[in-house]
Image (cartoon, rainbow over all chains, first blue to last red; front, side, top):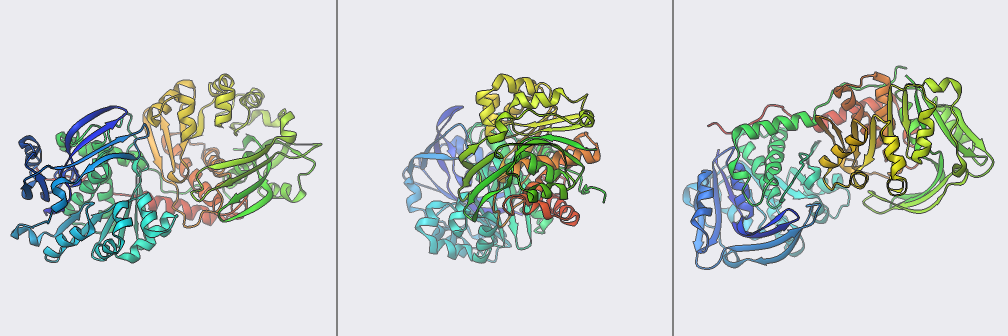
Length: 308
Length: 308
């Protein structure tokens, strides 16, 4: 089952304690697409400038990503520049140039209007709804957002959320969106905004999935040498929604399996800069790390207690 | 199998955003003992002043804790005063009065010198070794420590660690002790100091257990209303070592089950001030929350991938 994703395709300049890269391929839709492509076909809606290189386009095509919805317009591709400290947990943004993204109006190719799985990456909530409005009764809609929209476009964001099944969000943003310091209460509040499933991403601490009457906790994979966390959240989303589109299993069990697939793809992504690790994965590596996650978390379900 | 624990018995004055308490029962050995008492008999080695109240002594006796090794001397009981902000993740110490603890020399009752399970709570590493030296070939020795000893008594601490099977330590302290920013490498370094098992406590993010060729990740239980984290680490240790002494299963599976027991006891402890929640638990509640942990973390072990 193909997934339609709308989001940014970007050039990133990134510095971490382990190196730096100038104007390498990035963007939320890019990371999402490449991660999801290991599970299901992907349709990418976005915009690039005429500086977008044939090699970078080829990186996406090599993963079978359908680029019919990727507009190329005169001007420069979206550019982000940022750096990370030793804990790699939060980025410091140094520069953001929207460039061609500033005038972006998403247009879906006709056949894509019946996409059943939709991911609205972290863009203006007005644009998220503009995409959603063009799609005929999707089976599953998931979205991401960030502090910038929570602060600056709260009403529009709440309108988007009322149409969405799953929100993926980081812990600080979940607190900010809900006005609740405690994550259990934050998730309950966000449920009341619309999304029945709230996935809280906590970086190196893993992810929590909150639904009406269940919580699922997945750790992050303990890596000896993470290099660059850029795109980890979007890679997570790609593995998560990709798995759901592949299995079409939206039960609690299916969602949990998808969370682990998301964690697997995020863990690979941080092992190198840009898409360098994600684009050259093998099926065997993905299955192997999924099994490593199982080994990491497995324990006897039989409680122990003192004999009375 | 009884556990011998040496550590502090204290009066704590605590303020959290959810209330405050003046001079309530606390101390590492106290939290450890009450938590462990739900799994196995406990022998407490420590010291209190002649201000220690009969009711507080009774709290320990009610849980069957053997107080033959609890010295009572002229003077005041150890006193700690601290407060927590909204995230409850780190305490700010306002006052520490060692009082009678300053002159503490642990003396083990004769019969206790053949204790097979030993927990050295967070005290001066010289004292930790003084206790260990009095015990004849224990089967399992676990210990805790803190930044104060890592900075101020590093050589003595390393000497203690060379005699210990399991170190329980928080994440910041693991980094400080090892000089490694990454936890995987930090744990490997600490293994080289002696402890074959390193348990890294991460507060609301759960715990990681590192052994030579395995890692286990346990989440913390997502609570809607944590009240006071004081003693959470010692309650964790009590559930952990208590479970091991109960099952005598020191295999990987046994250690993982014990980590979950530790997480269960820590999760109860933070639900109220002092020992107020821990002392009135039922076997049913403990077994119930253990099952809740299983439900929180369970997922299909079968990987998903895209058909080729």
